[in-house]
Image (cartoon, rainbow, N blue to C red; front, side):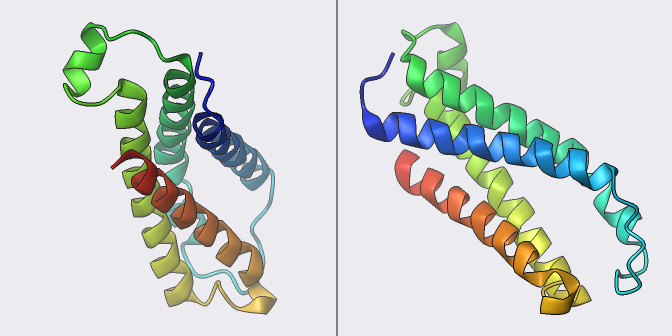
Length: 143
């Protein structure tokens, strides 16, 4: 196990993000999404993201576990990267996924007016900012 506080902080952020993703989708699927200001096709647009977000949550948790475990090099590590631990490699994969999803959400929300205060824009903005911030933190940490 790692004794470095920064390793535990980054791993904690990854796990919190994974739990946030799970909580978001559990909540999202329990809501009717019948607000008159939602764009046409909103449900059809958003629903498929549960798959990508689920993979992202799994990658975040796997990265966190491997980062704190400091497992000795093994075959799987060599398959991912010869120069960095597999937990760090997965952290970079998660960063790419976070950046892609954050940019896509930013573009969609901006185009459809979902950043407006009266359309729960503060929450949407916070989610997008948090996703992009975590992507940046992971990139800075692991590059």
